[in-house]
Image (cartoon, rainbow, N blue to C red):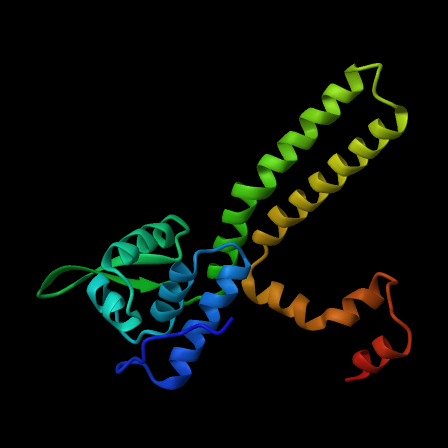
Length: 194
């Protein structure tokens, strides 16, 4: 389905495309399209914007903008900032990409992973106390609980790694994999030599 947008007089085509694409990606990740579009607009904005500026630029209802701004503030992806001589609220986005990614990852973990991990842990505990639960089911619940616990621990550790060091690890990619004995043959050797 093609998204129809009201042509903007204030956004260059590349900015408009980014806003639309970010909104589309947000929709695929379970984020309201308007919320994602407002985030994209604020991320690329040269100056803080008012809710009225956002509503006019994106052609969406002021009430939708207000609700979306509250949601983005809840995720700590935007903040309200004062502007001298203007009593209206102005908003700007977090522009540090690592900080933004960390806040999104932490927020999703708290909203999605932590409740799932608690439910799995409770199921495991219940299964261990119930003689009617098969040994196979107990083993699989234990394996899932251990897996989720390990991933959660890794996530928390990675959030503690300074961004420059984490970026260096990411850039080393295949070299890190081969260091721990997980190479992929010729393809990883080619990457390592580059």
